[in-house]
Image (cartoon, rainbow, N blue to C red; front, side, top):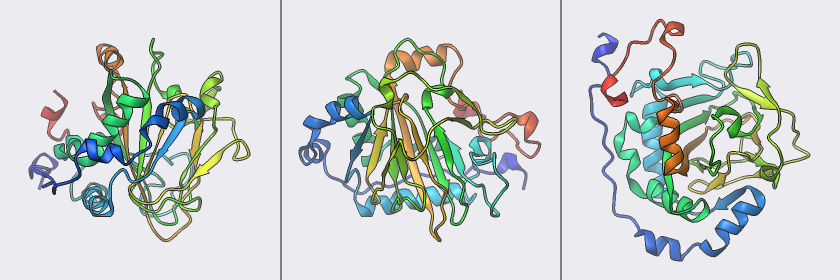
Length: 285
């Protein structure tokens, strides 16, 4: 079968009934969110989704990860700066997963992340992009210290939030997030490629400056684009899977798209991927 005939199946999540947004928000310390985010440069929110919904997201995640849903057009190795440790990517990144499973834009996770962002960024907060980042067992590849702004164009309004949702128990040993509290208030550090020709950027920082934030499944962190962060490699026998959503002011999403910046939505450079055939091009229209 040719690549052109793959991914013709429609994947749709049949979402079970879940707690209404207003009711979920009442159980959260919403009055402290904006202050904490502005003071530390990041925020921890527990219980974003419960264990039943974690399993739904994990099921879809594995279809994307194991190739049942062909995502090669948006899939790359964030750990390509190190020798490949196993038969899979050192750090698997799949951009724009909802292009393959549109109903990922529905459900409690998306609804609640949007609500949090309208509190911590402002009522003009809008969806920008999403991605999956997985560290498979024993891949032992760190994500270098960096600030997300180093990957983005110099926007006039720099408000932004990246929500990192743990789908597995996130620990220091399997690659939980580390942050440098207050680093968002300091100048952007100098960044450079993690190795020659790599798309992965890094900057000077150490764990001594940072703080780890282990999470149970279904909890999340949200950090600004200027906040220093990193994670260790996965040295355990289990996966460390994260679902990630980025928000920024609606006007800035429009500003990006007007300048043809869409966080890789157009897909990988085909001149470097001879095995890739454009799949379902209509999703990029």
